[in-house]
Length: 456
Image 1 (cartoon, rainbow, N blue to C red):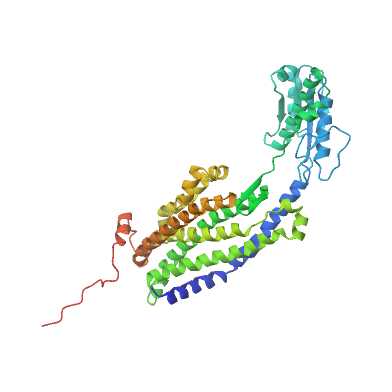
Image 2: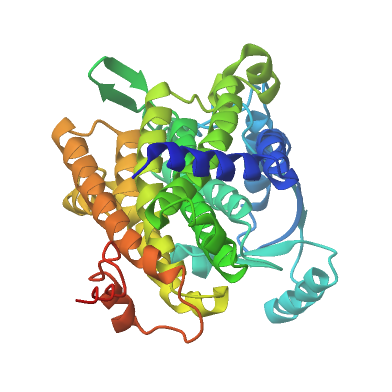
């Protein structure tokens, strides 16, 4: 192979793609969209959770006012920067954290009109007509079974439901304490919870692990996952397009098929790395003081360590070359995207399989399942990257994963090269899978027709 010719193909593929408007729009716009998404999320977190109008049918005759007081207390203590009032001390460890979403409750004490069923029907119509968001029935018989009925137009408002449930549990606890002859303030002490601070242990020491760091790792994980689809499909479309336009017949007059294939894969891969470098620069600078203060402090902005970026680039390169080789082998025998779709499901299933097991890896990065899929070549780029971003991975596992991944990539590149050099010049009838596999045994270095014998 001539690396000079391969470099010429790389240069052509790279320049041809970075000159397009789509490349620059994606490279420049996506970081701004990412930063804008962070601003929106922080703004939503700072805002109140909205207003909820709740009708309360208190059949006990004694829970409505304590419920209204406790919900009001939670709202006051949940506001960013709010000072403590003379109300009982909060038992919620998240109460003083900036950006915590709070809900403004507007409670109405509704009496029973006629019977309870008729009252429920009246309140149901008010919910349908959007006069109230919901209604709560405090029935002594249900409370004895530790149950309360809550009716609403939607049951997906988990923040509101959790806050309402916490207030009811707190009131019930205080009632039980008073019933046993203890001061009601004891409820504040009993309801206090431990705030668990997680520290990540590394060879260089320990550091407190924030949720933003895990979110950053998952963002890079799904970015790599999406890229394998995006740039693998670009390789496949590029091969099919050049073949259908007969451009490849002109190109291989001066470049061998394998050189053309490697140049195309490397060129498109460099386009992806160029975009990643631009996006990573923006991500690393999100921790600048000015931006951090605008977003609400360092805890609100994920810190991107260099080790995370290093592993990301490393596993992206290996994973990209492996899947690009598969997409090339899939595209070479066919003349259109429709013909290649059936075999294109092979790399798709391989990539999607990583998503199927990533929750188990996220919950136990050192478990047997996580180790297996981080060593399996087809899932190693995503799984091993995720493990290295979540905790300390033994060096031998990282080295073995890279070795297996490199070996598989070389084997697939060789296999794709065998198919590519025959398939790019095959037109007409769509080949079958057995025919494609026979191409691997072809020796194109030998002449196709034997020269005629010289006359004697």
